[in-house]
Structure formats: structure tokens, C-alpha cells
Length: 179
Ligand SMILES: Cc1cc2nc3c(=O)[nH]c(=O)nc-3n(C[C@H](O)[C@H](O)[C@H](O)COP(=O)(O)O)c2cc1C
Image 1 (cartoon, helix red, strand yellow):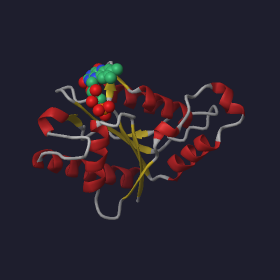
Image 2 (cartoon, rainbow, N blue to C red; image 1 turned 90 degrees about the vertical axis):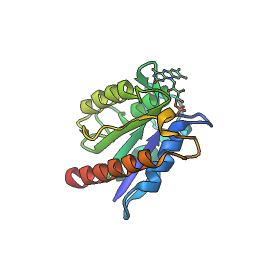
Image 3 (cartoon, rainbow, N blue to C red; image 1 turned 135 degrees about the vertical axis):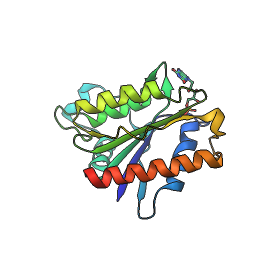
């Protein structure tokens, strides 16, 4: 099974990058985890629709080749990040060519507080429903990076790692059931 994942933070010290490392580490055997680095995408505007740049064609092809897509998002002002929004815009154009349409997709994210990106993820799920993505509702993964001891390098507490192991198993099962 191929999972394409996006990390919605471009920071060199990103805790969501750290979270992605943990998720790759605990992914069930037989799961191919492939990141598309969304920082390579230019800022979308609709002038590109007439002639999509190669990097955006590659991005859409990678999403379309996936059995499932995992969106690892920070929370910025109670919203998902601008980098994630930009990637979603590229995925959604030209009009009607929704690369996330019908795909099994899950959101997860980390912030340094108890909210754990809950608000950002809820916005993300709402956007995904517009494309007809199959959105995983449960289990939710709201990671309090401070409590979990999550670092940009991917260190994390044993109990959080255990939780994320179960979360990844549930996601892979969701993809299997919905692909
Ligand atoms: C512009 C901006 C807005 C933020 N807004 C929120 C927020 O709404 N909720 C939250 O929990 N943290 C918020 N934070 C703090 C981030 O959760 C924190 O910077 C986190 O480390 C971002 O993830 P990253 O390390 O993967 O970049 C915000 C940070 C920035 C830079």
C-alpha cells in the first residue's frame, strides 16, 4: 500500500516534521510512505491553469498514484497552514481535476498546546469533503507536542508512540477499506 504524505510546515525546527518521522517509523509493515515536499510548489494562482508547471504535474501525479493520503498539519491562527492551503489549491486545479477526489485521506497534527491542531484539522476535513475525499473521522490525532515530548528530530514519549502506532494501523485499515 502506498501512502503519500504532506508536511504542512516549512520550518527547519518543525514539530510536525518530527511527527512525520514518528508516523513513518510506526507505519505497519508493507506500507510505503512517500513524502511530497510541498515547499517546492510555487504559490498557486489561476494563471497557471493554462499550463501547469512540471513540479505541480508531478505533485498531482504523486497524489493520484497513492492508495491514501496523509496530511500532517500545523495550526496557524486556528487554521491549517498557508503551505498546506497552497498544496491543496494545486491539487484541486485545473477545475474539476481534483487529485484528492475520492481518495482516502486523514489529517493529523501537532502543536505545543492542548488544542493539538484540532481546529486546523476540522477546517481541513471540511475542505476535503468538497472534493469528495473519503475522510477518516476516527480515531482523531491531536498531538500536544509539549506533553508528548515531541521534537523536530522525531523523539517522542513511549505512550505517545504507542498511540501513534495504533493511529497508523487504523489509518491503513481505513485506506484498505476505502481505496
Ligand atoms: C502564524 C502562527 C499562528 C499560530 N497559531 C496557532 C494556533 O492557532 N493554534 C496553535 O495551537 N498554535 C498556533 N501557533 C503555534 C504553532 O502551533 C507552533 O509554532 C508549532 O510549532 C507549529 O508547527 P511546526 O513546528 O510544525 O511549524 C501558531 C504559530 C504561528 C507561526
